[in-house]
Image 1 (cartoon, chains in turn yellow, cyan):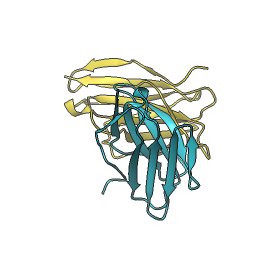
Image 2: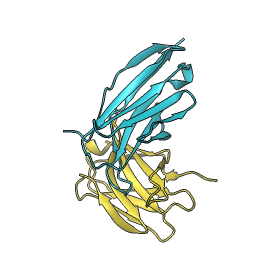
Image 3: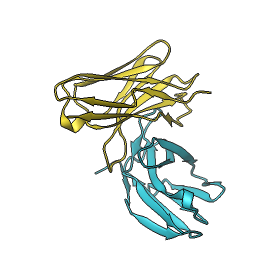
Length: 113
Length: 110
């Protein structure tokens, strides 16, 4: 079975640009969460989606947005990129509900120059 | 105050040693708890869930003390392959909005 897949794996953007990151959850998983991990820190929660509805939002500016599609895949969009947005962006997949264990994709490493 | 606090280490231990990591969390209503392992430049991988009764998986033992809001991970008979960063993770609700500690770095030395 395929695990959580994210694309692209690496990305270089310039300040002010916009970026879209993609995630396909494990088959059967209905919940997708997004995290940002900067070097030397633990991942920080950005968004959670369950059954195509936003269920949680972390402390990130409105430049960050996300959505979940009917097939449970998800996109994370970041507008007006700043140098500080350079990080590893991780997608986590879980059944949701009373099954909280989450499994992470390999991440997208975003570099803003 | 951070949601989850961990000693970042680093911990450098010889092969065969026993090492313990600790973690505290601030939200007393937190629902579920985990330890994840993260290798350099890789994604976090679930090591084990943590239950109030404590749980063991081979050389790894996890404990949860809800009264003290404290989570621990014990690794016995350390192997070189245990070298990684160990992340303490708390889920404050029934959703999947995890709060991560900064991670504790472990290096097992031959």
